[in-house]
Image (cartoon, rainbow, N blue to C red; front, top):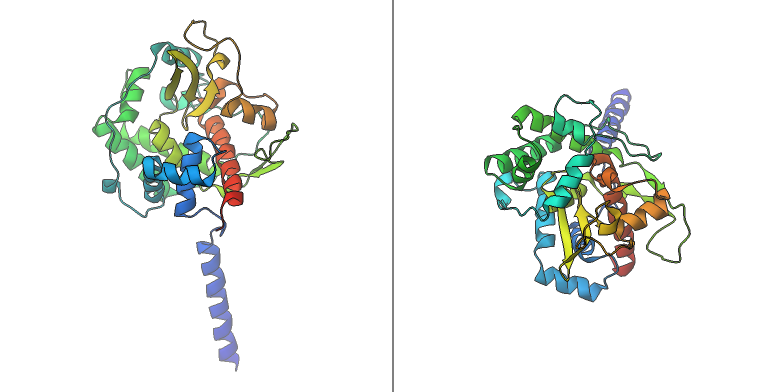
Length: 316
């Protein structure tokens, strides 16, 4: 009897340890939800299901995001991912604006890392102790491949810097990306301004968005270059700019630029302006979105809001 009890105890301890090691939240989005989230991230969170389904058939955006997510989750290999080698720097005036405002606090000897590692000016807990060596390695391998094949990451880098990134520096950047992507995983953000909109929840649980999905969106949008941007042009006028690692949409008039074809002399509330107002009372500025911590935080909030909105639209 003594030996049976000991055996049972050992088995129970084994299963307890196994559960601790392999446990993942059960309410994370599945592959279909990731496709929906990707479409809503690109086209806007207020689409109905019929329109979302139609866009799934018309656009490959969701296919790419899902493929990158699966890569970061180690479900597919690097050789399965396509390389986009050509880039268009949309407007040198905006690029120069970013370059002029890049901070340098000498926290890193590598200028590229130093330019993008600032903290956000809000009281948000960021736990940078989380390590995922497998994910960091996959990010680094992806960056190395893009660099060697002169992909978008390298094209963007050479627009801003004259030196070259070494493999060791890319490894350090990949580790930083991983830490920040995991850093907000236990964070809940509270709304500080009232609204009649049901989209902007009182409380936003950022743990609902896995780091791999956040990074998949970032890679699709910017190829993981933090100062990447895309000008949103309407009637030959730059109305908005998709800005930073996850290409958060900001109004062109938010930028301190005085050109007749940039902005329309009034700031419309776009993704950045809305999240900044409702959750941070305007404490962030556009340069905070160039920083890894600022951009990933705002992107996580938008993705978590989209996911919660999606849960109401469909039956799982």
